[in-house]
Every structure is written in structure tokens, then in C-alpha cells.
Image (cartoon, rainbow, N blue to C red; front, top):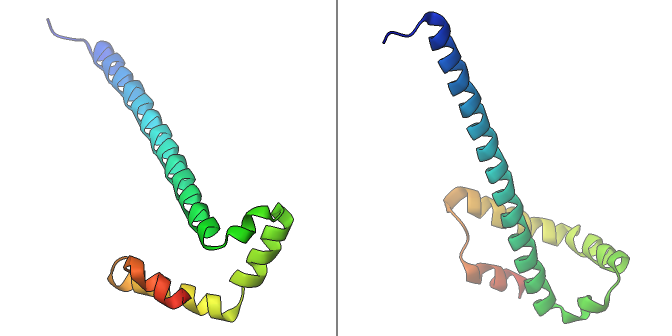
Amino acid sequence: MAKTKIEKIAGIEEEIRQLENKRRQLVQAQKAQERKDRTKRLCKRMGLFESLLPESISLTDEQFQIFLEKTVLTEQSRRILDGLTARRVAGGDADEGSGARERG
């Protein structure tokens, strides 16, 4: 049985609604994955930080912020970070051992 133009339009509009819903679901799933990845990254990095500097555990949030600002915003730390990010951009991620060599 042949569809009328009105039926075809209604069918296409329904497909559009379904695709828009699917797009919204995919965007939500992507955002949820990005949040999970960020949480995992933050936990892993802070765990590493605390294992290297266990004294930092007892600091208040304000003291920790001051420590980070005074430590991370130095010229030396800027050079190290710039070097690591330049290496990552130029030839893939830096190997795990290089960070330890630069810290030591």
C-alpha cells in the first residue's frame, strides 16, 4: 500500500525525533564518561602525590592550596611542565621513568 506524502512526512519527523533522542543519550553518555575519567585521574594523581609527600595529608585545604601555588608556580616547575607537555605533543606520551628522573 502506497504511503501518502503526509504519512511519509510524519514518518520522517518520527525518525528525526528518534535520532535527536539518540543524540542526546550519546551526549549524556559521553559527559558521564568524561566525569568518570576525570574522577579516576584526580584520585590516581592525588594518591601518587600523597605517596610522594605523605606530610601533605595533614594540611588543611587552604594550606595545601598555598603549598601548591608556591611550588607549582615556580619557574623551575614551569620549565619541567613545559618540557613534559612538549615531549608529549611531539612524540607521544613520555615514558613513566622520565618524570622520576626530572623530579630527582
